Length: 264
Image (tube, rainbow, N blue to C red; front, side, top):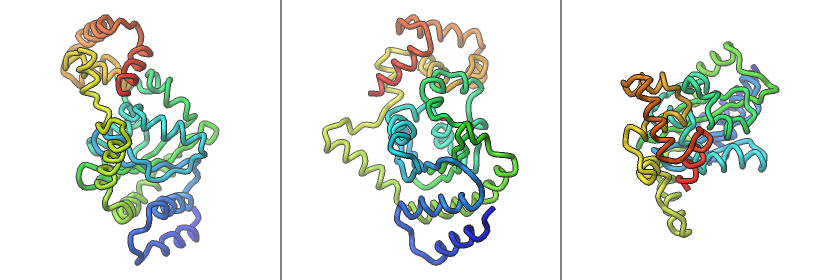
């Protein structure tokens, strides 16, 4: 831990008005850098199913395409961090604590998340007003290894400071979401956000079938789905076979492809 750097960051924040967006992200970056080692930072704001807002990141232009642009195009809807932000689950969480039981063997993981080359991701979850949650992620590449138990415990101790910074720096994110929707409308693109419900309706799935295949895509096993929905594992498998037959597919790869294309 670099105490000198930590105190410098805190000193700059004390008594200041709300920092501009880049300054807030940089303050979080420097605060975390004084505590431990990591490879990337990204800060997203979530509201419902709306496209997440990228508040700050440390990626190169090429990395930004994978970690931000591709993610915002639709895969975020299957992300464990996005799902946790909807609940919300304030605090500090490892990705693997939030991920479904088959997440790391799911088609979403193989087709998208594996491209990031991450060994681990830890997120600070800060719930704000109007159903908005800000998630500040620290990432380590496979070469860097996972965060230790001691490092994770240190991040949990830092959570009150991080939450206070978020509330101080980004007090009006609802307006940002509204402006983003209006901007898409003016540009001639669809003003509506990706709608999972619309996808399933367009594919002519029943509510139960829709609930099951969405959980499948998130990385839940048939056993996990049965427990969540209060039905038997056998019933889950029957519904999955019916969905595959209805859509004319035979694999989860094809299911994910149809899902993402339907989101547009």
